[in-house]
Length: 181
Ligand code: SF4
Ligand code: SF4
Image 1 (spheres, helix red, strand yellow):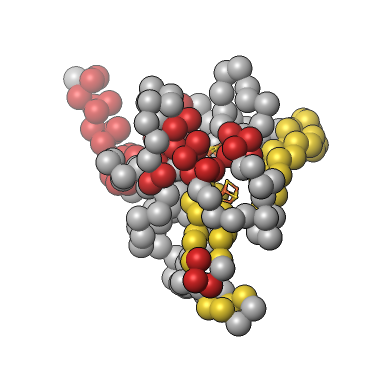
Image 2 (image 1 turned 90 degrees about the vertical axis):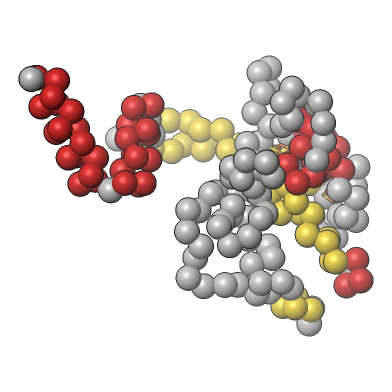
């Protein structure tokens, strides 16, 4: 497989600088509103501020991958003697909780680094974080060339996930028989 250059984008989070202002949530939800900037609702944000002012805890967490089933284990963090909520810092959009789901449709949310055309100079949450708690970085890495799945393959994969390979194969066989007939 051949190697290609890939741009890696990352956001470093400096917890010592975050004061829980939630500007990142506001701009992310506004940027992803339809039409853009027509509304802002932090429940639609792809970054969530996990906040516990009494314990002086402010942790920005980015929305990561969608998972169709909750995982078998649970994690719980104890930092400086303070115990945090179960799964509190997990990035997944998961059936066990409401985090990182579009509030009306329930569809999963995932940070897309503010993909835009023309491209943003930096992700919006980074630009709006006046405390420099979010630090953006871009670098190039050589990676194996990805084999891109065609739209049809992606659609078929999700159907197979939903109904199982056997049922899909049976349906295709039935359809091809009736077409021939
Ligand atoms: S990078 Fe963009 S999409 Fe991701 S959380 Fe920040 S504002 Fe939202
Ligand atoms: S904008 Fe910056 S300081 Fe404010 S909550 Fe987000 S990460 Fe924290």
